Every structure is written in structure tokens, then in C-alpha cells.
Image (cartoon, rainbow, N blue to C red):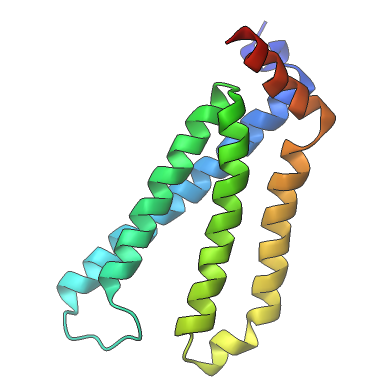
Length: 145
């Protein structure tokens, strides 16, 4: 019997969310690497924010989401609440950056789309990690610790 078939429905949800969390981590690694590449190849590029900021922010969120993924995959209760906190703070950070640093008309035109994507991401994590079957997964592992 495969490992996937041995998992409960709640555990399967957690594994899927772990994949999504790892995708967020990988995207932020990419953001950090691109920012570093641009900083080295275009040192005189004029931006509203230094590229080092984007590199540091990408690195920070990549590490945060990688740690959350580890907690989720091990079905630890801290993985659940840290993921909820990290996703929420990640979106808050993104919106603070938009409000402070967006300088183009295009950035202002895509605000409705960005709001919808933010709502979908938050709903995916908060909704899924608060499903009764998923909460039981983390309650059971807390009892085993």
C-alpha cells in the first residue's frame, strides 16, 4: 500500500498545503536570486527601493516558508500556527510594499487582481488549516509529543 493511501483525508490536505508552502518558499528564493543578479549586473538601476531589500526580503520569506513546510510535513501543531502567521504576515508585507513603493500606473491598475489573489491565498490557508479533519491531525500529534 502506498504512503498516500495510508494517510487520512486531513493528513492529505496538510501534504497538499505543504507543497503550496514549499512553492511559496521556492518563489521567494527566485525573487532573492533575481534581485541579486540585477544588483550585480545593473548597479546603477534607479528604483524606488534598493534591490538588496528585495533580495533580503526574498531570502527571509524563503526561510520562513521552508521552516513552516517542515512543521506541516511533520504534522506539528507549531507548523500549523506558524504557517497561518507567516502567510498572513507575508501578505501584509506585500501590501505595505505596494502602498509605499508602487510608482507606475500599471501597479495601480492591477490592485483589484492583487486583492483577489491575496484573498484566495489567505482563504486557501486559513480555510484549509481550520478544517475539522485537519485540526484533528495537529491535535493528535500534540498528544503524542
